[in-house]
Amino acid sequence: MRLLRAGSEQADVRLSWSELRLLGNALGEVRDGLDVLEFVTRLGMSRGEARALLDRIGAVIDQGQGTSAQER
Image 1 (cartoon, rainbow, N blue to C red):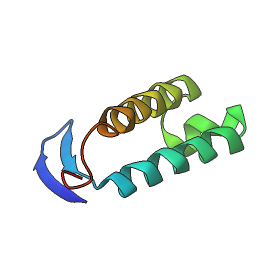
Image 2 (image 1 turned 60 degrees about the vertical axis):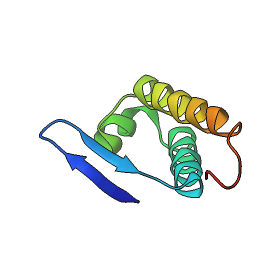
Image 3 (image 1 turned 30 degrees about the vertical axis):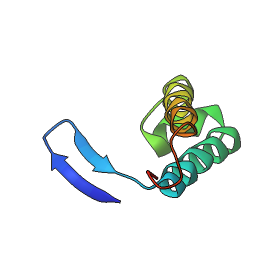
């Protein structure tokens, strides 16, 4: 992972495909493993926000499936 740009509300990072898949898989495991009551306390986001983020990560991975292995 490489930090490209950092601001007060956002960070732009470059991830390898394996790093992105790892983050998506970890978020999915945490989302499914934590009780609703402790979810926001531990992660700082709701289950719905986590689901939306996981969906966006999945969409990026799906889009990347069309690139050649050399571009990855």
